Amino acid sequence: MILPDIIQLLPDNIANQIAAGEVIQRPASAVKELLENAVDAGANEIRLIVNDAGKALIQVIDNGKGMSETDARMAFERHATSKIKSIDDLFTIKTMGFRGEALASIAAVAQVELKSKREEDETGVFIEIENSQVIKQEPIATATGTSIAMKNLFFNVPARRNFLKSNAAELRHIVDEFIRVAMSFPEIFFSFTSNGQQVFYLEKGSMKQRLVQILGNSYVSKLVPVQEQTDYLNIYGFVGKPETAKKTRGDQYFFVNNRFIKSAYLNHAVMNAFDEMIAKDSFPMYCLFIDLDPSQVDINVHPTKQEIKFEDEKIVYAFVQSAVKHALAQFSITPTLDFELDASIQSLDAVSKPFTEEKKSSASSSSLYNSFTKKHQSHFIESKSELKHWKSFYDKPQESSIETQVDTPALLNTNIKLQTDNLVQLHNSFILMQTEKGYYLVHQQNAHERILYERFALAVEGKPIATQQSLFPATMELAAADAVLLNELLPDMHQLGYQLEPFGNNTFVIQGTPADISGGGSQGAVSEKTAIEKMLEQYKHFSSDLKFSKREKLLRSLALQHSVKAGTVLSAKEMKVLVEDLFNCQTPNSTANGKPTYLEFKKDELDKLFGR
Image (tube, rainbow, N blue to C red; front, top):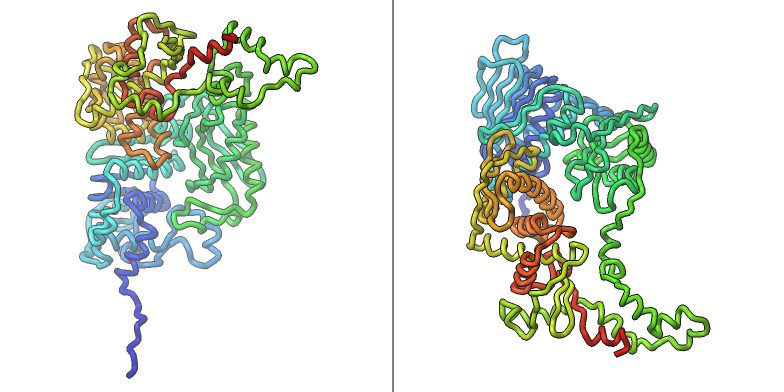
């Protein structure tokens, strides 16, 4: 018996769907391809329209050179491109969209309508494609340029559609891709509309104007120009002044020959240039363009073309670092002596714990101190077992002991007796509280952060926080990406007592804020504006940690921003309320991020220090 052959050629529509899995991973992938094609068509006006975060519609309209009827039909064939004619062309790419399978992939997973017309033609062409099959092709009256609309993405691949994220999450990816293309070409007008609402309206202008349009007016006076020209490459663009550094990498852009790339290696070069100018855990803003011979760079090492390989990475690294350093020096932005202790140092025991004159005296009279400061005393050094009390004196309360105490929600009802009538504030940052067995030193900011976190957690679980209406509602304008993020968080923020209303053009009106958390009124609204902006930045910082849910990140971010800061003077009543609220928490001994809220100092250990 002769077995039949089993290897067969895939039908075109199946092959295209497989290719689409690599090229079109989500709506943002299609946006990137269509925008880049519009740029390559020579357009100076490009409009992006999306509905339902691109799941229902992605449309790009340009006024470029358009296509003939034959070209329009051929554009949807696999491996069809106008930009590569020989293998050598693949290594000297100067255009943006050159991948031959892009439109074929889009047509394999969406319903596509194309309108295109060249200036010299009297009529244009209309083509409708579904599942890689041409449904309709006919002449049409249309403006010069091209309009391509893809509807119902992954309509024929439901498993892929189910893997898409929420509309807000997918829209953020689209915003990212739009920004990357729009930044590269400030000489082109771009607009972006989502569900009928205008997200971006970017007039033609200079590179600086385009950056300010995208990143926000706060950067107007905080951009340092970078400009270096060499025989090997040219570097130009802007870096933010050190004060613009943030806890997240958001505003960092590298472009090679006008194509956005991701490069940890070159990012390291910029970070080195900012050495000692910004905190170690902060990231500078930059938008840098590198122009060099296309033969010196390979852009085909990754399907998305965002990861590339340089012929000589070390030369490029050196030029980038030198250019940024030169720019910062040229504009007199140099490191200054910082007499404030680094945050990581401040958290060390030796710094964070108070060391009073009494403790100095006690320490200097101890045998341990004498063994190190007087001659011939080394043989008197105490054994480790006798030194234990030094460590236990500064020990934090053990988590296990705290957990046993909070079986009853209110710690005040347990055997720990808190004396909250005679509290003392130290350095406007700590609260000294006597107990039967010694005293607690409470960190006011960490304590308040824990209180707010638990209050917010209860709110989102079904016990909403009351809203205090603002007497004079404040208007808050955000960068487009932040506006999309805030829209995503609005339902949970409403539960937390915020009354925020979108006002168009990435603007929100703060109608109300959580009662008992902000002061309210006009001043309260103004401070809330800053708190919300910082909360969004903190939220993005948490976004790099995948173990946090969206809601958890929001709770932690809000608690951190609303907590009373170290250095704030508290009245006796405020201290009393703060301490009592802390010890009524389910987990009073630490913040959600694991920082201690208080330290315990035991009376018997104090006695030992004084030889009693």
